[in-house]
Image (cartoon, rainbow, N blue to C red; front, side, top):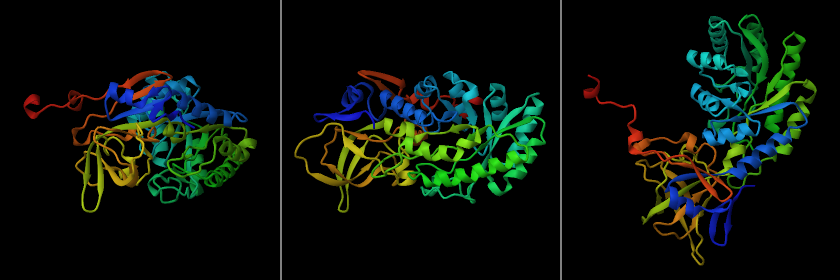
Length: 419
């Protein structure tokens, strides 16, 4: 459920007409519903009430400070992938003891920053990383809390670009080698082994892959405990999908019931890393039609949002529903490609989509854009990035201003200026 709905023929976000937002902040613009973000987090969190747990929002999905602060105030931690993400989380007051640091390419500097910040734990992806964390921690006179990310070799049945739990993936340690790596970790004085981590992919719409992978991980936990390794945290990762078109992902309650059934008797705190499922359907991208264009083979709507604003359709061939911000009666549907202003043939938001016949100047809402939208956006073609807006009831809050041309060149100098 989300709080984007029509009243009459006008699309609203909570109590605010989307057309009013476009009028005040311009287009393209990202718009998030505060009520939807809050509801999604609470439902997910409450689904795991039967076990000790910590929900660490996967902030790669949406790194806006206002979103991070909202989730933190509701009790969330963060799953971070870089020093920059850690900085953003700490900046809004997320307690470091609720932050886990994942990712296969942590640098020495990032490890030191995380240790100094006293985060909950590192999710370690390789033996070499394990030894670097030990080296950095030892040099700082500290002990680093670590969990090893195991690769359970489970097919998540999702897009290959976002499937992370197969043997050929760059992520994690082969589950068959995990015991050996845990023994190595225990031998390093500057490390404290506290957990285990898995993550098999993103936009997963079936429960069974989660259960299959977690059963393997739970079996490993029992084996490790038999050998004297205390596992206090079981990080089950994230990846639960949402409805973009006709997907039918499990509800959080169903998802939780299945996972709890696997780990309940292990007596560990369950760490969860939801991203898309919390924010995806809580946001839209509002764009304005610049031109309509017909060729012998295609009809086009040329809009002011492009692949630099929303990369998913070009990157993954992903589907996003597109709705008129104002519906007009008795308009026939036309099959169109919705394309942007970027100088690339791959710049599209939709292909061969049936939409009501539209005119230049009208507004469209690209739905389900709250996850991996702004966070993956860029300045390609020297385009300023779009603003982000949070709607709370009948109030509009611009939580990230639209970039200016001056922002585009901040930090740059010509050779004449540096010599």
